[in-house]
Length: 349
Image (cartoon, rainbow, N blue to C red; front, top):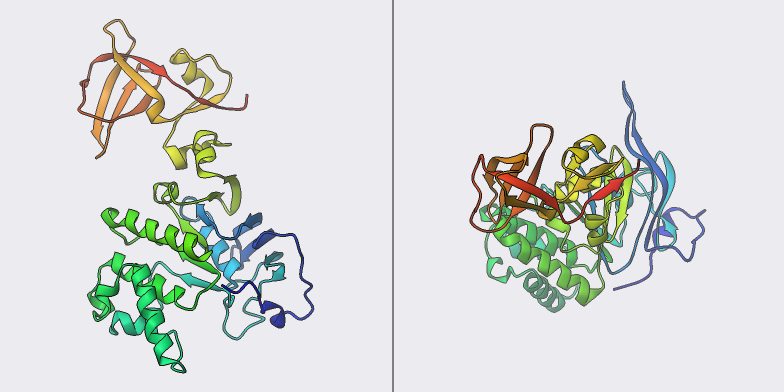
């Protein structure tokens, strides 16, 4: 892939800054003006490394998609700056057709796809007809990368959501962008095919040096495939880092609940379970052990089937917790149980 960027031609007064991450976001805000101004992104700073997969996660309305559009140049920051390879990213005021030429974006609604054209034509149409042999070969290679060569002669309208997603990614990748931006890429992909698509994306990153930045509201989709997670809430970045580190050592309650559906207990609730602490704590469901004990104060209040595991709700009247256990239930509703914890996370005094 090319490592040069011509975005400076749109902002001639700009000076390239060196020693920055591939994508550099510094003190960026985006305010949508109206009767009541909406601060969609609030003084955000972050760096995106090259040849990596970064996921921006958070609840709906947290600013994820807005940040993605700011990075691509579809929106203009109210303040701050966004740089790609040290150059300012051009926005709508700088270009007739917005969007950085080194990047491609795949939207969750597949807006760019021609539903009534064949898959082949949707992808091949992104290449010129100057070299038809190259166009044929490149289209075949790109379809093969996303495992959809067998769909080449089908209309997009006749495909499933997951198949359309692969076509959209092929269409974005055929011109070898340096960065692929994806907004909720697995939203319409059946769970059974999600892992295969994630594997293919990771393989493309490994093979080509592509940088991927994606938005998701479901952390389970991206924990296994991302090199870096960015957690957003109310327009701010409140956590970032390696997925495993954030899962086991979240810096705040929001991250703990978002990534692990943790039990959040106040200090008094924790003490009701014989945990000595003066802090609010988080306990991951898989870190809770339940052992039958007729003398215990807690009892099983509910058992929920969650597919690959069962969720037990246990409590003593003052507090209840949710525990995740794989395998056939050995406890029943109403059983008295001793509740113990392998680990818990404290959040200040």
